[in-house]
Amino acid sequence: MVSLKRIAADLGVSYTLVSKVLSGRLGTTGVSPKTRDAIIKKAKELDYTPNRLAVALKAGRKGAVGIFLHHIGSPGSDGSDRLLRGLAEGLEQSGLRMWLRFFRTDEGFMVACDTHLKREVDGLIVAGAHHPGLMPKFRDLERQNVPVVSIFNEMPASSRKVLTNVEINYERQGFLATEHLLKQGCRRLACFSTIDTRTAGFLRAHQEARIKVDPRLLIDTLSFHLEDGKSSLARLLKSAVPFDGIVCQSDAQANGAINELVRQGIKVPEAVKVTGIDNSPVAEDCIVPITSVTSEMKRAGLKAVEILLQKINGHSARSAVIEPSLYLRSSSGGEKSRYADLCDLE
Image (cartoon, rainbow, N blue to C red; front, side, top):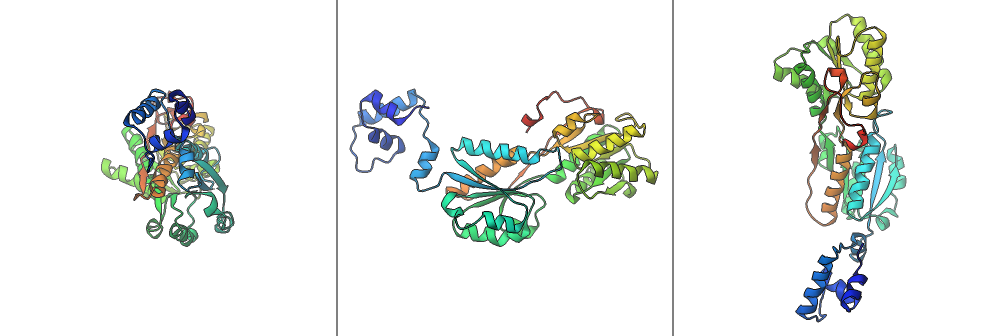
């Protein structure tokens, strides 16, 4: 990286003068137009880029952002990993350091978010599982000029009034998976329902296609794990209600359902088509690769950094919703994904 000292040495002027010219902070310092133009020209020739961390420190900032993460996703979904990659990439592009803490409870957050916090960071990004009990703390931090941005899904309206938030369009995730299977010819789709908003997308896709939903095919499922997919599939088979496709709400669920279907001698996708959500390594590694809707956690991390920087710089900032995409694989009769490295998909 080209330094101010290199520019100063090449032109035979002082480092201080180069710094003042390029920062636009000459003040009462006198400089001839010829020298000023020469400094600016040399900086362009050498492709000089200011050290953003140094600029932040000179402005009285700490040059660091606090990241508080409550782990999200089922085993194998790598949602938290993708989120951290997005956050790290966004902060690196901005020349800022990451001050990382993990927490699982309100108490754990309060311990990590102590009185030393304001001396170490310019703002906070809180991500993962939503903690309604922490809303008063987030209000207090913002009153103390510590901007906060959250990455929470399924937040109640009361929390949305407090936080500038980044979230994934869960309803769209359910819609895209369902719409795809309906277009593939499925007419009796089951839904392993864990999150109401994803199930709402399932219902909307049927409504737009003018296809009725058999309520017996809505299977309430407690969690996103592989075992939940297996147990939900067992309940579905035991009910003897006919079905030709399953919209699962995670790749782990879909993996469990597919394993059980294959064990029962039911062919996927010929007899039953299946979709998942997360577009995780689990989707590619399943015995029948899973058509899946993206979680978009990396993009959420990048967007959260962008919004936090707006707030740190004193600008107004708005919450954002990230739209997912569908990746086709064998489980729905679609083409197998050409992407080998799932970590780069988002």
